[in-house]
Amino acid sequence: MNTPEHYDLLLARCRTLFLAKTHDYGTAWRILRLPSVTDQIFIKANRIRTIQETGVQMVADDVNEEFVAIINYCLIALMQLHLPKETPLDMAPDAVALAYDHEAAENRRLLLAKNHDYGEAWRQMRVASITDLILMKLHRVKQLEDIGGAALVSESVEGSYRDMLNYAVFALILRGEG
Image 1 (cartoon, rainbow, N blue to C red):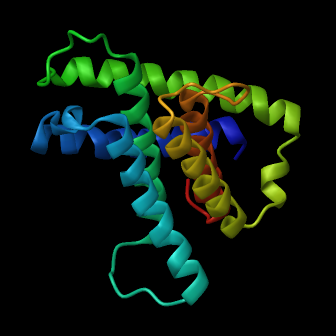
Image 2: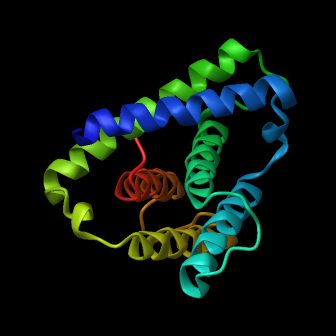
Image 3: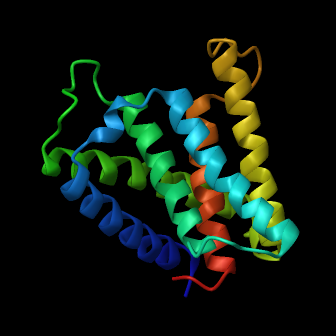
């Protein structure tokens, strides 16, 4: 299976889970400010790294599901960044699906462009290295959030969320998902 097919398959899985949780919880995620979303991604990535380093997993939650959570939290962040300020806390399920699909499509476009330019170099990487890249991006985002987004030469917070989402997709592909 090629990368675009993998992406589509994995994002369909993430979307199904996200919309099911929207059914169960509504749009409670709308309460989260971006630094809180960043911290949620950190919790997931840090757990993955701890399991990778220790080889011990004491909670049954699958590591692949943590990468899925990273994808969905990145999409939450992107939706929060782009939803108009007047968007109500409680959104209709069809509006959530539309926003989710828009951000996922934008990310797919970026993934394909970068994948072309980098020659699918990620396929030669270790999943542990991808986890480290996610954690590094998180550190950068936290730094940018702490300085109010006033970067001098760095990529935007949005770009970092998009990269982390794509790294999580790559990790899932390398782990045999999709």
